[in-house]
Amino acid sequence: MATSTKASSPPPSRRRASITDVAKAAGVAVGTVSNVLNKPDRVLPATRERVEAAIAELNFVRNGSARQLRAGTLTSVGVVVLDLSNPFFTDAARGIQDRLERDSFTLMVAGSDEDLDRERRYLRLYEEHGVQGVIVSPATDDIDHVLAIHERGTSAVLLDRPSPVPEVSSVAVDDVAGGRLAVEHLLAQGHERIAFLNGPHTIRQCRDRMAGAAMALADSGRDPGAALLEITVPALSPDGGEAGIREALELAPDRRPTAVFCVNDLVALGVLRTLRREGIQVPEEMAVVGYDDVTFAAELATPLTSVRQPTVELGTRAADLLFRPEGAAPEQVMFEPQLVVRESSTR
Image (tube, rainbow, N blue to C red; front, side):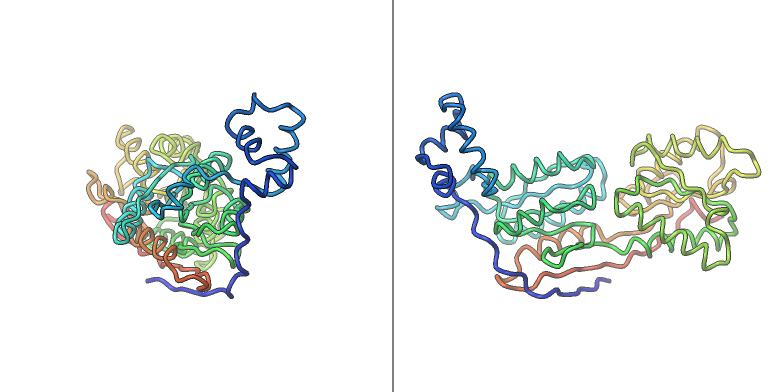
């Protein structure tokens, strides 16, 4: 189930600076600006510095597909996600692609690997190539570069993260509710010590899932500091899950958790793999809950309990928001997660 709220209409987008604007600001010919962009060694250093200063001042982005745009033949959307190896994002990209195909748009996809600088580089590249919209799963809370693209006239939508500004639309899942569902389930199974294998708090989803887990414990009358052990894994991957569960298993028996909540299903996969190698029975000796409910979760030797996110629908809705009528108010769409209980957490 999704809810949607609309922000007030944003101010009209600023006109994107042209190469002519740069030439005028620098006091040079258009051909000189072109040389600075394409053949800088042909331009005197002092002139080049003046042109580069004008480019920076005007926030000029050269358009690598201007000819196609003038002909009206370029219809593409650029997507940047956190991790292309994570089935959650590939499923979301499939939803985006299915929606774009209805309007004969093409899709370009890149992974930031949770690196803000890489995210910025890909978005800059997309803008230079004249994409008509971008969909971004931000690596950090800093989205100034996304807002700047929007203000220059390129549609922008945030994926898997609520927008912190009213000007940019977003599609996300209530991860606080998701974290709460997972831990409430483990408490109902009688677990008193729970490990949460989490990623860095710079990632919004990690913060929110932790907040939901702590709420579930507080609502049950337990002290989150005593009942919940948060372990930050080195990567949101099976290898990260293996490292995290090994840290939990090294604790003294009276402090060792009897259940593990994982920030995503890839981490949970590493946990299950390690527990099997160590001869620890799931769920009899260690219950495991994942997050995302990706395709493989139900197909594992021990089917994985997971918090389901509507991944394909997330992508479809994000693409829908790019096609809003001109002048329509931005929308913030929030989906509700669902707990899918399987054998990894119930005896």
